[in-house]
Amino acid sequence: MSFSTVSTTNQKGQIVIPKKLRSELGINSEVKLLITKIDEGVFIQPIRGFVASLHDSNLSYSQLLQKTQGAWKDDQDWIKQKNARSKIEKSASARRKKEW
Image (cartoon, rainbow, N blue to C red; front, side, top):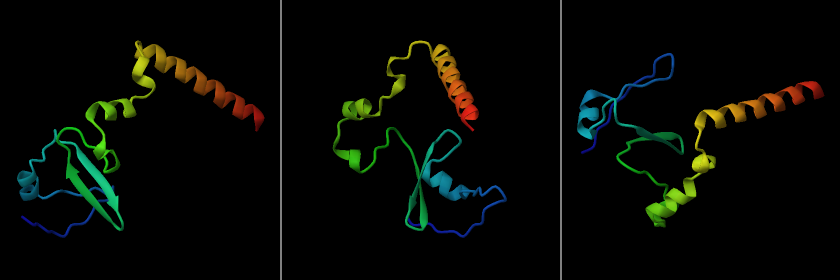
């Protein structure tokens, strides 16, 4: 079913999705929304489960997980890792300030 409405944003640039549309799409405060810029517009889609790009559509779920794993893969102690990264960033910042 097609649904159109005209709306404006508030001072923060936020919009309200009309209740009728939220109900129809099952959108509530627990549902995450995928917001995609397409040309001169915005496409908003409720996320139910895993979302992949068109490019990733030919990959299996395990391949997608391998593709998206990052530095977190081997982290056992998040606080220790966070503190170590913070030290490195502060050190790099101090070096840059000296160079100026």
